[in-house]
Amino acid sequence: MARQTQAHTRDSKKWFISGLIVLSAVGLGGGYLLSSYLGSNNEETIKDVSTIRGGETRPTLSPARFTGKIASTYEIAREIPEILDSLYCYCDCKKHFGHKSLLTCYVDEHAAFCDVCMDEAIRAYELFKQGKDVLTIRKTIDKEFSR
Image (spheres, rainbow, N blue to C red):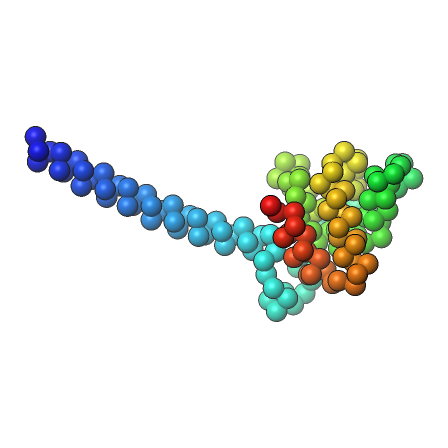
């Protein structure tokens, strides 16, 4: 009986160690994929900023349809579409609704009902007005909103 318990313990340890190795590999690979998706690339590796664009081509809704903060953010989308199209939207609408970028939130009424979309656009606009380039804006947005 003692011999059988030792064999069982040895097999359990092998499975445990194998599991840890697999989880570590998945974790490292997942971290790499997530970091490259969220824009951890630095300016030196991105030569063409069009490569980070989401590719949204539809027009945004008119800000005149809205009031207050909502109207302001739709105006931002009209003023800096290239920047918003270069940003991941942290309400995860890409995952849930197939959006291409933050700009996609403004081609319909999605952003009008989402504080994340509006706050992200406002922050991007503030950075743009400070003279920041699209890569700096993207890095800042990723850092501030990915928490």
